[in-house]
Image (cartoon, rainbow, N blue to C red; front, side, top):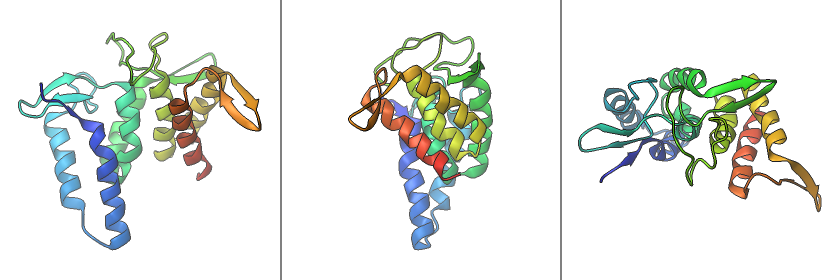
Length: 192
């Protein structure tokens, strides 16, 4: 079955937008075409957020929006189309970001949708996804929502069981790729 993972296109389109700025080239046409295609065919009917994957031939949604793909894609979407990114972040925050007892994390699936963790999302605990939560730090920081980004970053410290080992901070409960995602988000916060 043919599948198209929408957010997999976001890094290259973000790079194209930055190329256009750097070299004074107009890349708006291809970026606008992507956004219009997403708006026309690939928004999750329940959340209004871009679906995770679709069949590009039939325009049918294979999987609705998931925290992992939404939060990952949002980091790049602002470069592609700022207005669309603001809309999607607002919907994504409402659908996926949850706070309780002073901790903030991202759900892997929107309310009312059940699902299992996989190789991309990691294990799902109480509906919360570790990769979605780590990526949400970067998404919130890029969207200038520093309060949410900092809340997510604080929760990652608690959930990750950090230790200082040989002069390096390591999260004992977060794999290396997850630690890099958290670093990505925290680095964006430093720029604010």
